Length: 145
Image (tube, rainbow, N blue to C red; front, side, top):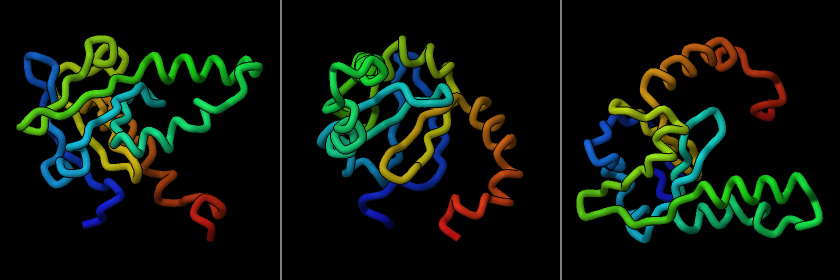
């Protein structure tokens, strides 16, 4: 198992309190805490504390005189929730984030390298189907070949 990278696809369900169980094999990585933020494509990003620091650092240290940087800082940091998983490895997804990602019950958690992503199950199925052709024939430069 890769210790510093997340991979795989997992299909937990949101409970009635808006909690989701993180994949068991990665619970130790998330024991110190998680940062859940809005991601691109209407999914949620889930980082370890160190992973979020690396991800957010360029935005945090960007010049406040740059209008685009300020907008990104505000959106990213105002829409991030820090917490610790409970004893069962569950995290709470705040209502605003569930609404943003369209999460109701069936979700998919993806390992995507330095983060995990939480998607509505149908939205992920649609996205994955739309990406099939591009994955089968990647651009030459995408993978360095």
